[in-house]
Length: 636
Image (cartoon, rainbow, N blue to C red; front, side, top):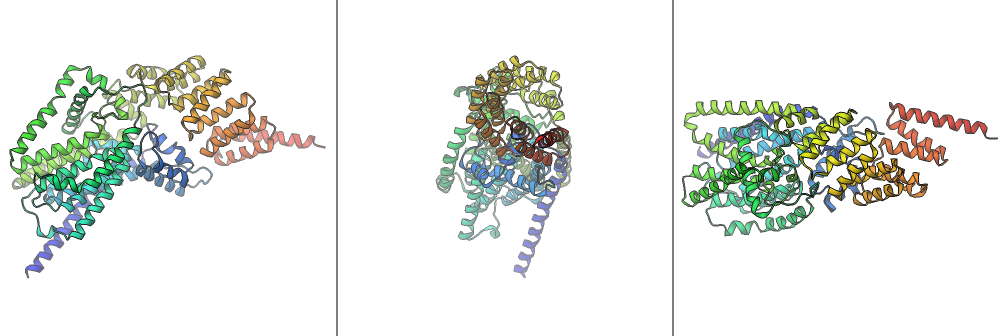
């Protein structure tokens, strides 16, 4: 009878666990479902996905390249595998075989599903440590509903964060199962049914380690996971750390290997000098306070906070405030060794989890985006686990006042969800997103570039110019405003100004193939062909997969009557991007000028097939077919 009762309880608990998981997943999908209709942004989605040459001409060789070496300054092959799978699915679903498109809804759907799955993993992790179903559910909903999570989920390129956190949270869950704590976080006794055989424990350890490897291959910020494992081990099994450290030896080896790669490949877009070592703790302290404010007062979220190190170091109040986390840490350590009550220890655990989640982007070590801002919403994605743990503990503590606690939790979650829906809507339009960001931070150079790009796409070059000048003044060491100014000057027919602006971009960032390619084009228009060829050769040397550089090189070579190398460059540009309109059109025109009318017509026919509604392609094709008939009619 007793055995039957025990089995019955386990069945009920199992059903409740999966009902809770289903509820978390469903609510996350509903909350973020609107993002599935969003498009791509020029803000990194272009180079990562829809304009990535490895996506445009995807092959086993290009996919293998993500594993062989870093791409765009990051070694994240797992994330690029995810994006490649989305691209392959897009091509499979495309109705136009000649011009397959990369569909943004596939990438947004993937982000939503991953975020929902992450909420489920938080729910299961808290249950593993003995939290009640209600408290774990509220904490998991807090994790998915907080508006600071919107950027990572609503932005296609934010997959780095949601995918890496999926593997990271899965790794934490299985490591918790491996630990089999003698006492749990939320209760002082562990269920006997939670004990597993040594073989099962080994399996949990292996799964956790595999998930850890996948997590760091998705984004290097997941290198903090071993610290979280150690934190769990110390809390659940006492203060002795020798055994936990021995268990983490494989993780330490993987950590060292990957850290070497990640640290060596990070780069910036200017002459930005790393923050002095003595100042870095202050930069980190300011960032922690900033994120705490956003967690506690979830308003005024922006794509670009413009909070770069120079701004922080120039503000005495921010520097004084940056000392608060260190005083808090000292007090916390003192309390910990005084062996406080479990709820106080849990508060310290939550604070440590929050801080460790942020650690890779706090500035103790330089990272690429720090050039623009020391803080960014997506960097806090995994760190929200800390406040979620704290909320779970508070709800668990006040279970005796169940109704009041549930009402207060519902009000909190409803307020967060409302703010999240508002924040999510901003990502439906690039213009709306950047304008809101500038309303929060008027000197945000990244947002200024975003709006200027939107105006440029509309052909409003006169309105683009003042925005780019503001971006240049906000971050004088950033090369991109100078490059974009060069493009704007070209369209305003100020070629010499364009050449000068692009030269400044290259001075600030010598490894800048886009600026080199653009300057090559401008110099060609200025009839400075020798300089143009030199600039383009340098561009293709720096970026062998950059199709525009090969096209501009080909055009410069044609002007100097170097037909054979020009032909090679045209073909290379089309090999990298077979559907590039300009490359195929200019190749066709070059073939015609070279006297190969049949080959020119063949290229235009391909172009017409790829772009059936394009009037320019049809006009050139009709003209060449007419010329062919004229030639044939004159033949004897």
